Image (cartoon, rainbow, N blue to C red; front, side, top):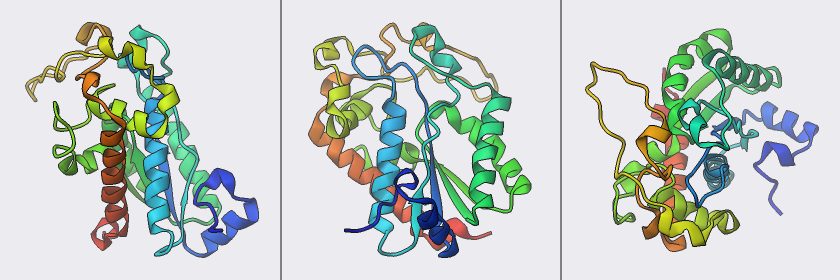
Length: 252
C-alpha cells in the first residue's frame, strides 16, 4: 500500500524523511463561509483539499510530495452578513500564513506551493508573496486552483465559463466528492445573478454578498450534476499537477 501524501496522516519521522528527500509541500488555503441555501459552509475547504490531494497522488510516483493541513479560514468579510462564516483580518491572515510557512521551513522543507480555493483570498495572497519570500528561506509559489484550471471548464459547464459561487461548478464538484453536504431539496432556491457586477479598474468598491445576491449564490446551481463534478475535479487535478511539475513554475 502506497504511503499517504497527506501530512496529517503521516508520522513525525515519516515527515522528517520527506523533508530530507526534498519533498515539495502543497499548502491548501481556503475559507469557511456561506454557500447559499444548499451547500455546507465548508465547500472551499473540502474542494481545495480534495484537488490538492488528488494532484499530489498523481505526482507521487514522480517526486516526493506532501499536502500540508488545510488553512480553513481566510478573507471572507464579504460573506459575514449571511451567517455561518469565519473571517480573518489582513494582519491576522498574514501572521497565520507566515507561521505555517516558518513551521514548514523549520522542519527542513525548501519549497511550498500555496494552493488557494477561495476568491476572497487572491488579493491578500498576491500582496503577501514578497513578504513570504523575504521573511523565510523558502521558495514559495501561489495559485488559485479554479483559476488555473479555468481553460478546461467551459467544455463541462452549461451556463458559465468558470467557477463563481455556490454555482453549477461548485455544486457539481460537491455532488461528486461530498454528496452528503449538498441539500438537494434546496436546489430550486440556489440561483442568483449570473456574475458579479464588474467595476471599472480605476474605481474600487466593497460589496457584501447580502447586497449582491438574495440567495447567497452567484450563478445557477440547478444545472449541477455529479458527473460534471467528477470531470471538473479531474480537470483541476490535472492543471495543478501540470503546474507543479513544470520547470518554469520554479524558475527565478
